Amino acid sequence: MNEQEIMNVEEKLMANVYAKKPIIITKGKGALVWDIHDKEYIDCTGSYGVCVVGHSHPKVVEAIKKQAETLISCHGSFYSDVRSELLQKIIQITPKGLDKVFLANSGAETVECAIKLARKFSGKPEIVAMMGAFHGKTMGALSATWDKKYRDPFKPLVPEFKHVPPDNLERVREAITEKTAAILVEPIRGEGGIRVPPNGFLQGLREICNEKNILLIFDEVQTGFGRTGKIFACEHWNVIPDIICLAKSVAGGLPIGMTIAREDIMSSFKVGEHSSTFSGSPLVCAAACAAIDVLVNEKLPERAATLGEYFKEKLQDLQTRYRIIKEVRGLGLMIGVELRFDVLNILIKSMNKGALILDAGRNVLRFLPPLVIKKEQIDKVLVVLDSVIEEEENARLCGSSSN
Ligand SMILES: Cc1ncc(COP(=O)(O)O)c(C=O)c1O
Image (tube, rainbow, N blue to C red; front, side, top):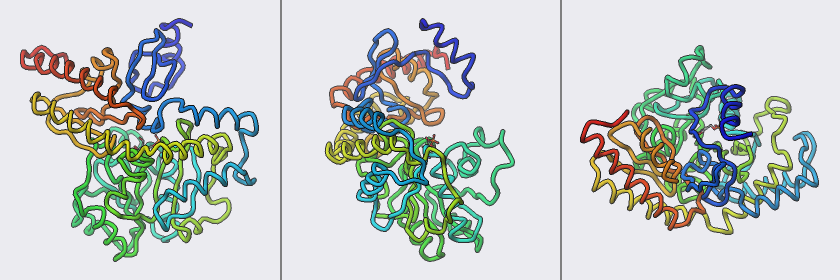
């Protein structure tokens, strides 16, 4: 099929739920991807944060090949050598006290599991979530997600979810009742615009939960697995939740999700109360074992911390030069650049110049590159951004921009 035919087929046959960019990606390596014409792009989307260890990391590829030839699928009701290896590996790098895992296939599923666990363990229905939060789009996760555009078409949602203003411990306290099972929060809001909480907020949530005997759930689907400069973002504030949701990048690009909880909490599930056909398949587990080894052996969290600081400083330099940049924020290689305008033009123009960037809401550029990205590649992205932002600022000053 030629380029146009490929696009036509997706347009015609695929559910129309993605805002498509007009390129066909055919190949990836590290922080680079190539389109059907062999044009190279630096991938600061990391497939929406999935490619922490980079595209097609050789160790992940090798593990997938080897496992594919041995055993691809094995239901959770049978034991699996590679699954048990993965469970040990993940527990070794997870904060102390969280030692039992439900394996799933996506981020939203890990949140569904956490919600069910919180209700089952506590015998209470209410979940307190944050305004601006994003936890996924399945019905339970969607009920915790904040944005009206995702929620409203699908009402009625799951009852007993409450949203409070983020970073405000007093409002959290006020929202808690005798029916509250858990507080669910992203340590750093991703889709909500890369919002890092003020020091004390997550610690404060932990104290409230201890005091009121309710569970603290951290959704680390976007922040986890080294992205922010620590394996889990909660380590920046030394706060350990009762349940962690982890997904996106753990299997080096294959679909995975993990809800990791205290043993007593996870044990509140009885046989059959939660499951998933694909959960913990050997193929995915082998890829995840390899990805965890890469994360640890290549010291990717440390790399994210150093390169993230460098990237952020350079973006802040741009901010001093361009008025359309309102704020640069983030931790590690999870960075947001808030503009005074819609970012769409900048995303498209950057793409045309070889840098793929994400948005987070209408006016925030979001950078979630693979943690293996090279400094020179960050520099190239900065050159692209500099020229695109200059062009956009000039166009806006002359009143000729198209959005
Ligand atoms: C914090 C957070 N939670 C949950 C999800 C949902 O993950 P998935 O799209 O894999 O269902 C996302 C996805 O971006 C996310 O960022």
